[in-house]
Structure formats: structure tokens, C-alpha cells
Image (cartoon, rainbow, N blue to C red; front, side, top):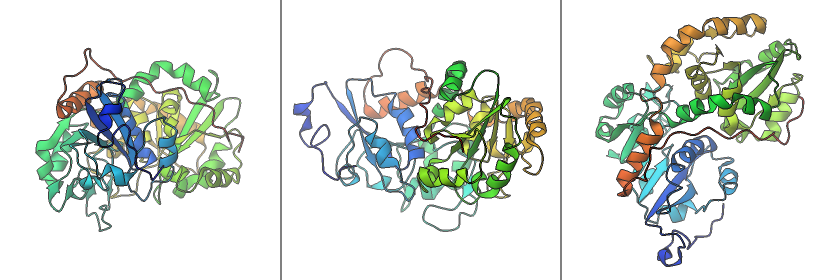
Length: 404
């Protein structure tokens, strides 16, 4: 990302150079590749409006690897963070928290994956003591002051979490649903196209494997043993596609991750680009995953899940992650996979009864509700017509994708 300030389209006096009749400036704040996906979903609701100009910036974050490259690939205007914090915007959108208190804009705080699930450490490095990621005071306040103007929530239960962990955010909470889930749901009818893009025919069972990042991830905890189990699946009946969290893929480097994977020699296993995980979910017949959001989203749209649960104390009681661990088949890497995959299918009805309702209580409403909040803060009338979530793109073949 260039460190040079840009006069167009967001610099002082830039309006005189605008070709479109721009009336409002929106800042899309991308901390990491993972959070950028949620920001991109949201800004897509306003980008078609000629009255709105969107500019992007990369905010500081320890897991920012790959974010500059992602932003550079968008064909968008990207300004340096130093310019962003010294400029004024009509709206800012973010799915992470670092540095937001420095912005001069009303902020909509978007969810970073499925909220109300993970219990973690606070972002200032102190013990979390039961803090729920994204909904506790350390994520939403600075010196006691609430940072975002709007805190979007997908589920009414998030209000209870806010009441306990950040009560000053309650008046700012808006039930908007989950745009990521709604886009995945809208993608399900394109299953055949996604399978084709992933190189999987209609005959084989597509097994998707996902891992979050860090010490409690599937990759860290069971990857060698899982590879041994995957190696036993007949290639004429099964296809395996794996996706890593961007913090793994970009944090360690795709080359390094692939080198580690090659050492395990699983015939036919292919990696999928991290941001194509929703296309993989729409195409999959069964999902093997840990407590990361992709596993929960897959369960929420009815994909049978073989689950590696988080250690005790890492997920919030009553959350979708807790419900999934309680209802679905649990992964045992010492046992043959085919029987476990069958058990995952058998538990599908129990999961469907327990998990989706804990992910979103405004299913199918996210695009409409979120756009309404955006235009309320922009002080503009919404464009005509009801907006709905649209399917994700068909994945492009990964350029390094070779048998491992």
C-alpha cells in the first residue's frame, strides 16, 4: 500500500475533481484479510450508489499480513492509515477494533465472524476472564468512551452479552442479522458451479476441511493424524479440499503452509484460497472443522459437520459453538473417517434444530437492515428497491494447487 497521501477522491477540496455526483465519503477499514471479507460484504451495499465514494485503508493489526496485497487487488482507492485518521468521513465500516478511536467518522462496527462464541483474551493483552470477542468493553471502548456509533448484532442474545460486558454499547446495538450467513445461503443453489470451480465432479463426496489459527486450531492440534486418516479415503469416491484461516495462510506464508502440507503427502488434497471458504461450504457434502466460524456457518446451512471442539473454557456458554459441540459428531483422528462421516450425516437433524437459531435471528434480512443503518448515518435516502444478499463468486483455481 502506498504511503503517499492521495488528493483524489478523498483529499481536501477533491470534490471539484469528481466525475460522479459524489455527496458522501465512506471509509472501509480493513485490519486483516479475515475482517476485510466482512467489510467488503458491507461496502458492496453502498458502492453502486453514485452519491457514495468508498475508499479503503489498512488499519494496524498484528495479523495484517496479506491485507495490503488484498486491497491492492481490488481496483479500489486505498489511502494510508495516517491519511485516514487525519481526514473526515461521513461513515466508516470496520470488523475489527484497533485504532478506530482515532477516526473522524461515525463508525458501524461489523461482526468479525459469528459473534458471542469465543471467550478470549482482551486486545490489550490482559487476561480475558470470560470476555466474549468483539462484544466486551475492551473491543468497543477507549478510556470508557464508546467508539462505534452502531454495533451490529446478528442475534438477540448478543444484547445480553453487551449488558454484562459493555453496557454503554446497548443503546448503539442494532439487530442487522448476519450478512456472511445470508450470502452463503444465497450461494447454495450454485453448488454445481462451485464444485466445478473446485475441480470436483458430481460423483465424489466432497470433504471440506477447515482450520482456524493459533494453538487451539485443527492445524495445530490434529493435522498430522488427520492427514493419516484422510489418506485412507478412496480417491475415486472422495475429494478433499482444505482451507486455512487467513492468519495461518498469510501469517506463515502460503509457500510455508504448502511445504508443511506436502510433507504429509495426502494424495488428491487441494488447498482453497482462504476467502473462497463460502464457495467451498456451498459445494461441500460434509465438513471437518474446529470451532472457527466457517465450521459454524457450514452447520448453519445444513452441511453435516465432523467437529473438533474447542478446549473447555474457550467458547461462550449457550453459543452456537457450544451447541455444535453438543449436537454433532465429534472428530476422533484415531478412528476410520468413513464411519465418522456417516455419523456426521446422522446428526444433521439435531444440529439443524440447535445451531442455526443461535447464529442469526434475522435470517435473510442482513442486507436490507444493514443498508438502512448505513444510509441513516450517511443522512441520505436509500436507493429504491429492496436489497438482498447475493451469491459469492465461483472460486478460481488456486495457482499453486498441485497434489500434495
